[in-house]
Image (cartoon, rainbow, N blue to C red; front, side, top):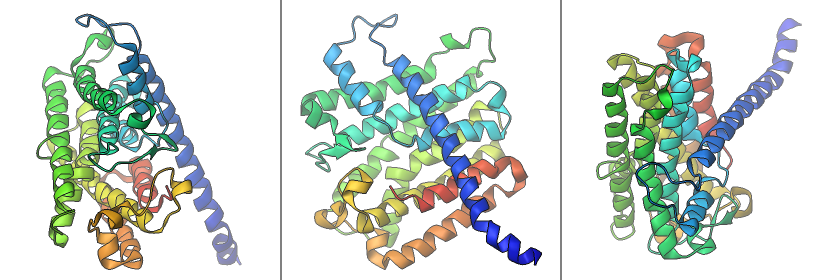
Length: 324
């Protein structure tokens, strides 16, 4: 009888856990959004001359338009895994810097020369709400702002500051994750895939760069903020790589199967552009099976941390099962 009752309540328990996780995700997103709103203030900082109003409005349009803020969430929770929850302000600033890079990439990715999208997160893309030149500059400004945030230690007064070597590692890590050998390089490979279809290994490589690099950085950055040792940093980086692949695979699956109105952006773009994806190559059922395996791989990497890693394990499951 106990087994029957336990079986009957298991789905309810799973649903409750998901609700709690999504509530925490939303709380973290709101905190990051508030911080970004403060950073994107109209008052010029020392060393700046003036912040042009139209440019700032475009940056705010691209960065303050909602979204799950998954990458910032991973920074904060990875830092908390190693005891940084007692001084979360630095983790949130790193999270905000990473989100600036992510939002810049979306603004540029939506441009007519790239994916040519009219909608992002249920509202007009920046080049539609403003114009193409302003959208390019808004992306440029968000990218450079990210490194301003990471390198600025003025907010550390009276608190536990990140040591200079760790701050340098954060700056260098974001530059490499977002640049030539990371996200931007992956975007280049993605454009090339419209002309020459890559093989499966090529698809995995470009997705590990285009999408996975920032997820990898997010998880390792949290460990760096918390002062974790090299082995823990590498383990968290591998965890980030696994869920980065899961995120892209889930995204490709949604592009194949989801409704554009529900998703808040266009669907079927990859097929229309002639791009090969793993989901299209092997089919939705294969993709779902792979997602399950990636979640198990990611969760296995966190086993040494026991219950402390419960939230990050939930994050892996959420990434793989998201419906938008």
